[in-house]
Length: 499
Image (cartoon, rainbow, N blue to C red):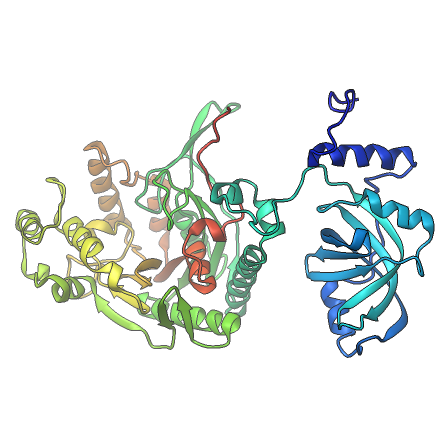
């Protein structure tokens, strides 16, 4: 017995009224939480199958449906039942239900999950309905749903109690279903080009694969600290070295101990892929093709609306170097600037703050971030990034200060990142050592020396093109979602304080 059931219930309180009905169900010998219900149809199947049923027409077809009660009208005569596919109306009348069954309706509430058995009819007003002969309590809901007309207006509650959000908001359900459809398409695309999907560790003893601040955890049995992976890059390239396949990819979670915003969640989903014998030009073509086909698969048109903007995914996309874009926007030609000191001075002159320790490449990247990227609305490959910020990319074949790398921007967001992969072990070791110096100088995002990865390169990594695409941001674009929390089932939230 709970404390609530040991005292008189206040039936004006919705939760206590539900408790009272639960007790009545049990008193009638009815199990309010049975293990199974044999359902024959979902709501959408019924709507499709009986689409041609005329007003006032009835059938002898018996169906068994189940779902959550979203509305009750006329003392239970009409019930709106919602399942994962949609809604169907349940018609409960003395002509088709016995007295015990009709009496049971008094114990039903909004939010309860029930089963219904009956024949199909369309009301004279045109509503497709199940004329019930039997109703079954499947799950007695003990808490009231949010009030219908105001819905779930508390934004924080929507994310903390996603189940309520999904019950009340069709838009939220559709967005998360669309996410599943997008991820499924990407997986099908990759499998279609002969790639092999793999899984790599989340626990890393050495942080690497991206410049980011990691989360740490401790393994008791090994008495060792581990980093939660910030990227899947280095393990995937080891598989290319081993010859597992010409292309390997992973769709999975990565973790970065950074800020939260409408575009950032500390744990996020990405796809990373590595293709033997390809360079970054090949990867540009591949990403354009995959994204274009994904947009067509979801929307049936290459042009989509995001907020008040129209974005056109028709290929080919614009390709332009980072320094050229900066020069267009600011008038500063950083390719003509030779030293870090001159670069920092040039940034200051155009009002962009950079750290006193910033090198040439870091200055270029900072100016780009502050003055250019927000305006890259249409799909654009930003190419030829500075080597200073790209420790894992191959040196540019024409300019030693640059690397063969691009970042893809859409709606002012970085969506993808790709390289011609560095496969010279001696240069890679040198780059790692430079990163270690930056780390010792206080840069928590600088990468660590991964000696085993250098050893793998010494064994031999073929010419390889690699790329990563942020699934969450891509889903935001294709679902017209302005907040990353809307496209993640359970986003990271500040712990709720106990009152």
